[in-house]
Length: 256
Ligand SMILES: [Zn+2]
Image (cartoon, rainbow, N blue to C red):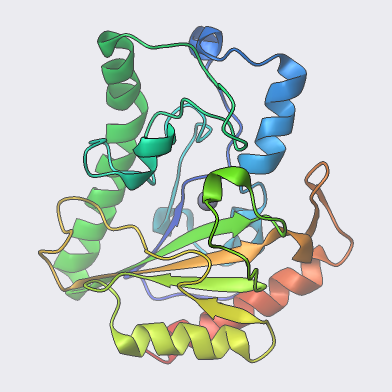
């Protein structure tokens, strides 16, 4: 079954790539083998595939580079980004287990990374949201992620409970109607958390805390539902799980 979503829905997929451009590979101090292991821990490998069937490409914004290059989900300004305090701001210095990921970068190298990979991604997302606002008067960003069944060291000490699905909301950009619709829909079959263990939902800076017509909600899916977490290979039940997740997502969007 193919699911259709209203044109004012935009899917944001920031973490499913493992691409590290050749000319910046030297920033990373990990061997190729260690880098592969880091990808398995940090990449949302199948997030787009889980939900993408039926979503037109013009309604998706997918980062073409690995989050290890630049994490487009973070604030570009480290002073606004709480994760920068542990070396996991927009440009990661640390691995998932808080070991050193890359060498020290110069200011010029940092600004080049942002200029080439961060701002173009946000420009695309912002443009699609603006288009939706001008045509439909509203936009809903669905921010797609996955998470490991075992807590990773960088996530901090407080995240003990790992439900199958976690819905993240923003106090300004997620209405209680949207929050309830998503939570109730997924919770029919999947053990679902609301802002636990992960909270928040991405909104581009141009609209953040200033334009209530822009809504956002995050869906984090626990990886052991559909992949072998040792190597990120798909499990045989992937298609069934994906179909169920998509139907609950579709129902949630239809009800708002
Ligand atoms: Zn993610």
